View: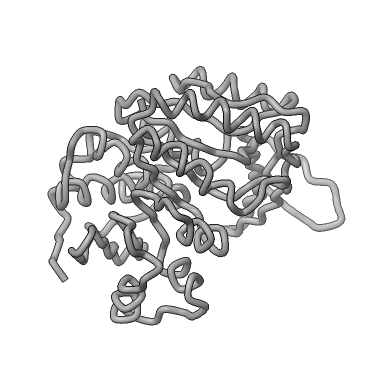
Length: 309
C-alpha cells in the first residue's frame, strides 16, 4: 500500500461564468466541486495506475465529510484524522482565459490533534510500502512537522517522497533523517538558494549543493523542457515528448505518483525516471487535474530521451 499525506486538503470549487464583473452579481451554471489538495491528486493518479492507495491528513466539518465520501467513491482508502476545525474551500473563477483563485488558510490544528495524527500515522507507516508528502502545513503545526513524519516512516523502512517548497523544504532537508526523493521545479530549486536559476548550468550547480547530501533522488522538473534528475552520484538530463498541453495543473503531483508507483513495482534508474516523468506529461494532456490515461504510458515512455550528464 502507498500512503499519501495531505495535511491541509480542500474542497476545490471551480466557477466558469459566462460574464464576470466586479462589484456585481454573477450567476454561474458551470460549477464543479472536487476533493482538492496536492496529495489527493497523487492519490487519484495512483488509483488510476492500479496501485493500492490510502490517503491521510486532517479533515473536519461538512467539507471534510464531502472529501471523505468522494475519495472513498474513487477507491482511495480513507485514513484521514477527524478534527474540530472546518476543512477549507479553495475557489477558482475562470473567465476570458484568466483564472482568479481565492484560497482559504484552513483550520488551525490543535496540539491533541497533532499528537493523535502522529500516533495513528505510526500505525499506518507499518503497513505502508511508500509514503508521499505533498503541499504546505496547516496552521498550528511547527515547521519541523514533516521531519517528524519522515523519521517515523523511515523507522519502518518506508521511503518518503516529499513535494513541498520554500523554507519548509529547506528546513526538512536540514533534518537528521532525509526524504528518499524530492521534486522541486526550477523556480523552487532557485528559491532554496535565494536566486533565480537562469539556465541549465545553474541547475546543475545547484544540484551539487551539500543541502542535498544523502537525498537519494532529486527530480527537478522544467515544464515543457523536461527535467534534471540526480540519483546518488548520477545526473541525468531528461527530454519529454512535445505535446499540446490542455491542463498542466497537477502534473507535478502526477510525477510524484509515477515515481511512487514505479518504486513499488521495482523499476530502477532510467526506467523509473521515464515512468515517473511520463505521468506529468500524461496529466498535462487531460482536461481533469490529477488524471492520466494508462493506455498512453507506453507511447510517452517510448518518446523520452535520457542523457547522462
